[in-house]
Amino acid sequence: MDALKKIAESSMKTEIPQFSIGDTIKIGVKIREGDKERVQMFEGTVIAKKGSGVAETFTVRRVSYGVGVERVFPVHSPNVVSVQVVRRGRVRRSKLYYLRDRVGKAAKVKEQIK
Image (tube, rainbow, N blue to C red; front, side, top):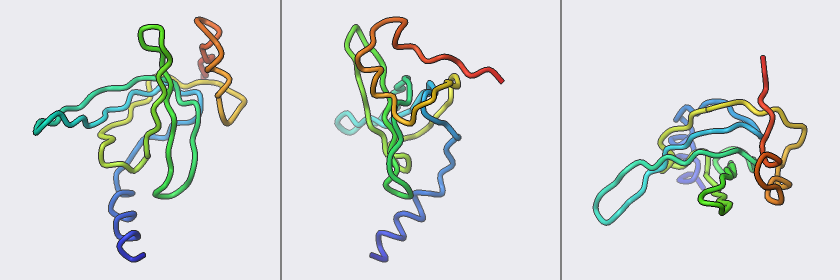
C-alpha cells in the first residue's frame, strides 16, 4: 500500500489545466511504435469525468471519418503529455452520453461566453 501511495504522490505533481464536462480539449498522448516514441494529438469533447485521486479518468469523444471515437484517459497517466482547453462548453449535465445518438450540428455543445 505504501508503494501505491508513493506512485500516487509522484504522478499527481504534474499540473493539468482545469476543464469540465462539455469542454473541447486537445490531449497529447505518447504513442510507442517499436522502439520510437511520438506524441499524437487527440481533440474532442469531454463527455464524462469519473473517479477521484489517482484513479480519476475522463472520457473524450470525437467523430473521425464519420465514425464516433471515444477514449478514456487517466488524468495522472504518464502517457498523457499535455492537455489544452480549446473552447469552453455550456452544459447542464454531468455526463453527456446522449451525444452518442446525435449526428451533425445536433451533436454540438454550446460555447460558454464569459
